Image 1: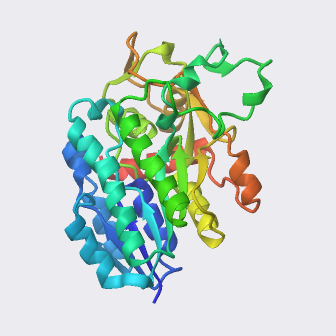
Image 2 (image 1 turned 180 degrees about the vertical axis):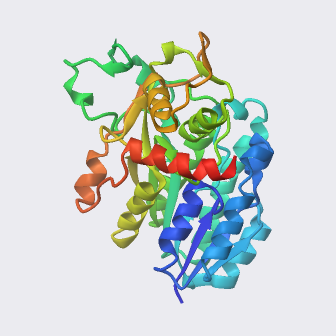
Length: 353
């Protein structure tokens, strides 16, 4: 029997992974205890998504387990053993603002939880492929020291700085920079995943995501930029832009496109590999441009204001360079552009609010 394990299985990337892998594995195991509701309140609960995937996929089995618990996770791995062929680890505390409130919780979920998942993989199914959803926040605020030019609706890389014309690649330093506590806990996890590959020879892949998005995102003010933006556009709730004149740029990758990257890696895995994963030049926007798109799609004028205070460690301009991944896996490409993704969000969120 071929088994895939997905942590954070009721979240955005987790649930997309379940859907994508359901017809490719005999059994998909989901691990999710809905800590997102604790992090961001009931409006961010993933319970609705858990129910949706349980109803939709007959070969999905859910465990309400805590990834920080060696006992709970160990029992799951012991039950399926070497039948486990793939682990997609997406569970996390995902907000740098929230991390400063409860550093112990943030670190234990992001770093200790990842260590538990890695060690259980090593003990019970060392030949399995281990995929980790990291973040561009591992680069800290180093991207902010690039030569940037202010344009009408966005910040952009200076035209004479050709190295970054396609975005930021994996060679950017993760050292000597301000990460936020969230970024630091994800760095710890990121390096652990690499080290289990290098030290133990395990097939581990690290995917440093830009803004991960899609119609099944339970967006909240502190996390889920596009989903929360669209929610505010639909409901009329106030939205605050933090700093940089609303011209800060984010790339946005649809959850399906990211999981498709995982699938390509699984079919031809490498050891201790690291990839930047985002919308790249194909799918990106500034806050101002994102608001304009939301207004166009909903037909509503957004209720928003601009704060002069930016979030600590926030990026002014971040676009992922996916050249390395596309060189290793030339058959992969993006499927969903920004407007298509936002339209899907509009259709989905309108049914839930």
